Image 1 (cartoon, rainbow, N blue to C red):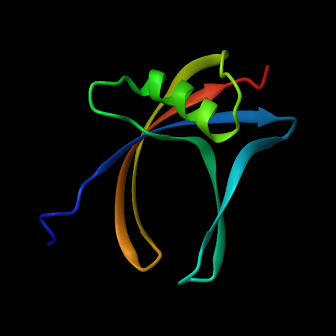
Image 2 (image 1 turned 30 degrees about the vertical axis):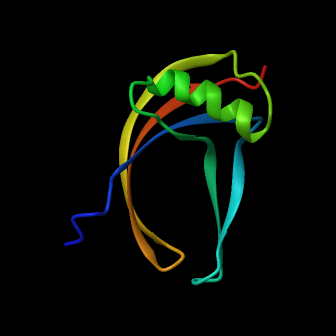
Length: 98
């Protein structure tokens, strides 16, 4: 086990868009696969996941996220991206596009 590897804390927002979800597209060049994930990003030390979600939305799209409706829960994600293992603990919120 690699003791230098870290678990990353994330905050992501699920935004319904009609009968779909508003997601960002990513690509893994090693697997040659496209993937999709909710918008958001890393939580900094001392920052709440709610505050991180607002900050990350401004950085990603840039838009102010004003309608965070409710906390949906937490999930754990173990994955391989670009040939390297990853481990995330994700705080998930329901948001509104308006």
